[in-house]
Amino acid sequence: MAELTRKELILFLIRAGEHPRLRNIDLSELDLRGFDFQGADLSMAEFIQSDLEHANLREANLQKAVLYSTNLQKADLSWTNLVGANLRLARLDGANLTGANLEGVNMSGINLTGVNLLQANLTGVDLTRSILKDAHINMDQFAQVKSLTGAIMPDGFHHA
Image 1 (cartoon, rainbow, N blue to C red):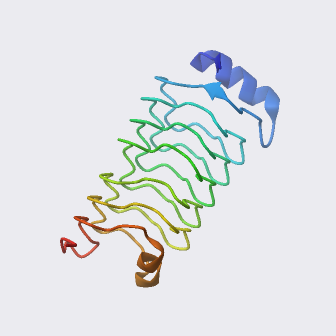
Image 2: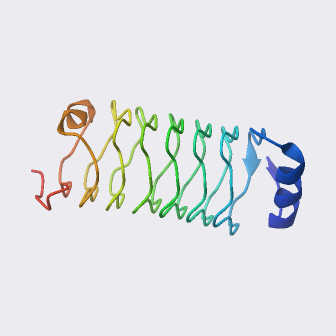
Image 3: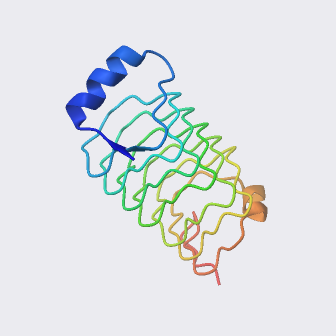
């Protein structure tokens, strides 16, 4: 897997124009706060312990990406493909996941406080022990979810 420094990534993105292809790239442990990855192909990329706070990932392809222990607080992940992504221990509070495809993603134990999940595909998503306090989600989306056991619901109620 290719590994880039922050400086090399900035230079690449400047030259790449719209919808850069960054498949299978290792961007682990980088400070990528506020980066604009809109529409980028980041499938199978690794962002292990990276900081993507306030990053623009709108319409990006993050299919099978590894976002383990990644800071995605207040990031724009709207209309993003996250099918098969590893979000274990990711921090997503305040993120925008409007219309994101999260089908089958394990989001158990993740803090989703204030996250916008409206129009997101939550089919088969595991939200066991997740914190959904003040999350924006329609009640009918909960029917798509695999598990809500122990989750803290948007109204603060603890799901059995």
